[in-house]
Length: 360
Image (tube, rainbow, N blue to C red):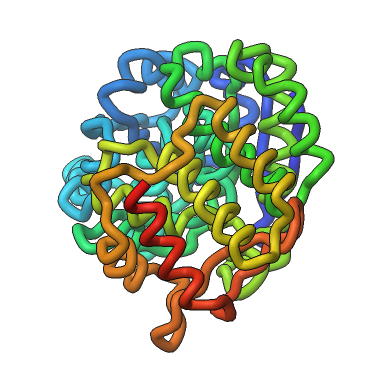
């Protein structure tokens, strides 16, 4: 087992990474506030892992709420099911909410924990690669709105993150690839040594080699933790973690939540960001080619859906959280491993780029 720490002073917490950790109650018990536990899961993950977790937590007063699986259910309406369960079971401020699932469950359970009785303990047990390497770490919690993704939420850190790599054994191939988008992101924005390693080991990751997956998760979480420690509330460097996300969120919203997986949209979005960076004269052709080739090798889309127009992209990106003073800010690349968040790019080139993307 590997243990990393997200260093946030009095709110610091560990990330445990290893195999069969879901059965290790000694890792969870120090982070549970009282006997009251509410496990939040979905109807895909719960039939596989909920009983195991309940056995691990024997002795606690455990309740569970099982939500429908899918990005389309990441809403205020679904969030109320968590509150309904907590209130109907008369759970108090000593409650610990445990998220057992992927990024959608982690986001909703975390947001519920931030709100319920003005804040209760929260533990992340991510079961998808995407949530293990990204969304479970750093305290971003949210639900979607029909006009924009993740627009209603809070920064709320967990007490710990427990990554059981065994849960990846049951992950569908499409979900595995979606998680690899966020893994690749770390190599693109700041860790060229990791990018080189990914080029050499992508086949092993796709074949679910445990050593390769464990290493990729560890390096990804370490990169994420280092950034969060410097900029917890995304006022600066943390925005670089959104490479490809402004384009990607527009794709998800346009197509309808759940049609494209988040990682698929981010994969296409990173390709768009790399291509735009190249057209602006910032990114070398070779680096652009390497980025797109690696995303393609991970079995991810490398271009936006043909149904989207440039006008749709502009309308949806106008409500992106990185818009400041009416100016769209994008995460772009000066070089492989050198990302910047900026509104200072040639708008004529940008408009022509979007037209070309949407007419291809």
